Image (tube, rainbow, N blue to C red):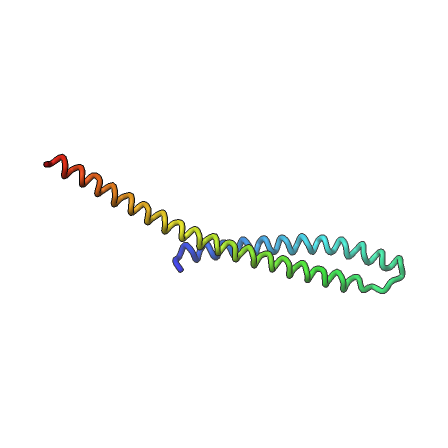
Length: 115
């Protein structure tokens, strides 16, 4: 793996970790708001407080979903990088072929003019 590719991997990982942390924070804030409301309702109805466990399970489920989504994004980014490299190789090959054909074309016309 070359240096640029390693730098891109590092930047991609940092960016995905940042997104993950933002999503976890957003769900945590949402979960805390719902937890406060749920505990109040449970206390009013006289129910046992198993809502905290339920909310914790929901938060863990959300984290697992976020991790799954990040894993999917990471795999998509790696696939895109692979396609970018293939496209770059194709374009470099085409450029080389165009340059070769130009040299042949100009070389051929120079030979005809000299005769």
